[in-house]
Amino acid sequence: MENKTQKTIAPRTEMPCQPANVRRHNFDEVAIGYTEEMALAEAKRCLQCKKPLCMRGCPVEVPIKEFIGFAAQGKFDDAYRSIRTANSLPAVCGRVCPQEHQCEGKCVLTAKGQPVAIGRLERFVADRFIAKSACEQLTGEAACPRSDTTLKVACLGSGPASLTCAGSLAAKGISVDVFEALHEPGGVLVYGIPSFRLPKDIVKTEIDSMSQTGVNFHLNWVGGRTITVDDLLTQGYKAVFIGVGAGLPVFLGIPGENLIGVFSANEYLTRVNLGRAYRFPEMDTPVFPGKHVTVFGAGNVAMDAARTAMRMGAEKVSIVYRRTRAEMPARHEEIEHAEEEGINFEMLASPVQFNGDDQMILQSVTLQRMRLGEPDASGRCRPEPIEGDVYDLPTDLAIVALGTRSNPILLEATPNLERNAKGYIVINEETGETSIPNVFAGGDIVTGAATVILAMGAGRKAAQEISKRLL
Image (cartoon, rainbow, N blue to C red):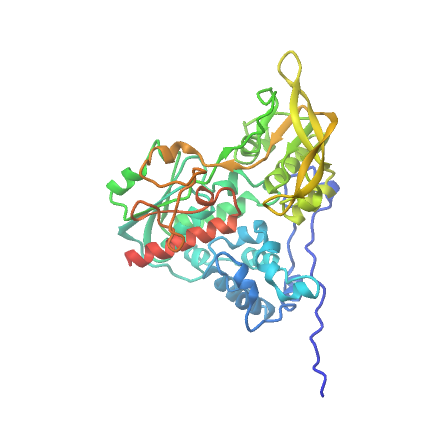
C-alpha cells in the first residue's frame, strides 16, 4: 500500500510585541501586529479543510476558510471583503475576541500542535485594508444602498451588540439612529478596554464609517430617562434594538468597602479609558493614585485593571484570586502579559475586610488563605478557607472586578419587558425579539457579562430578523 505524503505543518507565527519593561510604562498597543510576510506564512498553515470546524466556533459565522484562503494568496482586499460579509468590527474582534475558546479552539491543527492564528490574521487583514469610501469600510463594497428614511430603526446603547445591529441594517439601506448615554460612542469598547489592548482610533474608525453611511449617533441620551422604548415606537421607529449592556458593578460585600480608595473596575477603567486619565493633565479627568494596588477577580477585566494601574504609576499591583492560575477565566494571553509586566498574583486568597485609618482612607486588606476542595457546579474545585490563616496585604487602592449585573434604569422604565430571575431581558433565541413586538435585545443585558463577539452575534441575529420583516 502506498504511503500518503502528509503536509508538514510549519510552527505558528508568533506576534511581535513591545518588550514588557517598555510597555508597562505606556498605553501604546502591546501587540505590534504581523508584517505581510508573517501573515502570508501564517495563512499558508491553514489546511483549507473541506468541513471547516473553525466556523462552528465563531458566533458571527465569519467565513474563516475563505478569508484565510484569500490571505494565503496575498489577496488581502478580497480577504477583508469576505470577513465583512459577517463581521462589522473585524479590527476590534481580531484584538479582543477569545479565539482560543472559539474559532481557534475548533481548528484541527490543535490536535497536532498550535491552531492557525485566526484572530491575528483577521486583525492584519482589517488593519491593512484601506477603504476607498466609508461604504467600503463598512461593507467591503464600493457603494452602499441609499438609506430609506421611511424604514427607521433605533438602537439603544452603542456597544458591540448595537454597533453590529446598526451596521448590518445600514448596509441594507435601513435608516438607523443610535442613542448612547455617554458622551462618546463605543460602549465597553471605549470605556472598558484599555488602549494598550484596543487602541481608541481603531474603534473611532469603525464608528466613523457607520456615521458616514447613514447611521446617526445621538450622544448623552439615557435609555429610560432621556428616551424610552415607548417613546421610540410612538415616534415611528419600525423596530428597536436594546443593547445597553450590564454596567452595574458587583461588590464584595465585606466590611470597609466604603473606605476612600475602594473602586469598582467599571469606575476605575472608565475614568482612565473614556476620560483619558492616562493623559492627565493634558486631559482634565484625574484618577485616584495608588502605589500599592490590589485587584479582586481573575477575568479579563481584572487583568485590564491591574495592567492599567501599573501603567498609571503603581509600585506594586497584586491580583487576588481564591483559586489557582489554572482556574483563572481570563484569556491566557492576557494572564501571560500581566505576568511579564510584573503583576503579582495572590493565589488561593479571599478578602475578609478592608482596613482604613482614622480619616477613612484605605490602608490594607485582610486576606483569608484558601485551599481547593471538591468540584462545584461549574466543574472547578471549590475554594475552602484554611481556618485561622489570615494576613494583611498593604493596599491604598483596591479595584473590585467581580463582574456586573443589569442596570435597572431602562428596565424599570419598560415594565412590560419580560425579565428573568437575575433581571436580564428574556428574548426569543431564534430571533432576538423580546416580549414586546418588534423590540429586540442582545449582548450583556440578555446574557450577563460575556464577550464582545457574543454580543456582536446577538446584534447580527437581530438585524437579520429586522431586515427580513422590513424589506
